[in-house]
Image (cartoon, rainbow, N blue to C red; front, side, top):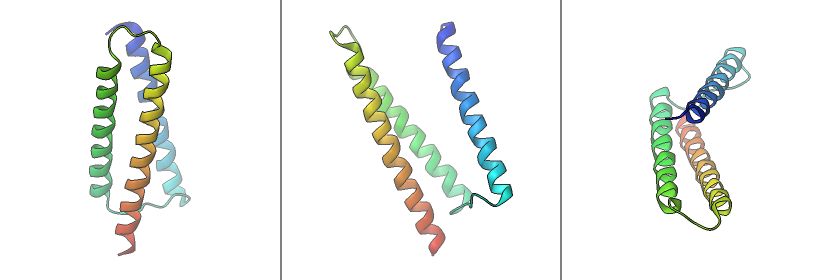
Length: 102
């Protein structure tokens, strides 16, 4: 990978790490409450990540090659990824909260 790709990976790791540390601090303070079981939470997180990675790979496969409007295709791919990520977040939250109510 080139330097730009490594910088992108570094920014993602920093962003996710910062979010994790913030949520952890908020949980200790009692502001954020955990819903569900940690194993189920991690399993859903893994499944969601794998599904998003598969959708991203599919988008890269579909839009790979020389096309006339790469910006339009990128915006479509980003829109689909944001939509899939939002649906997965909603679904996982619903599963975890439903599991906590039992």
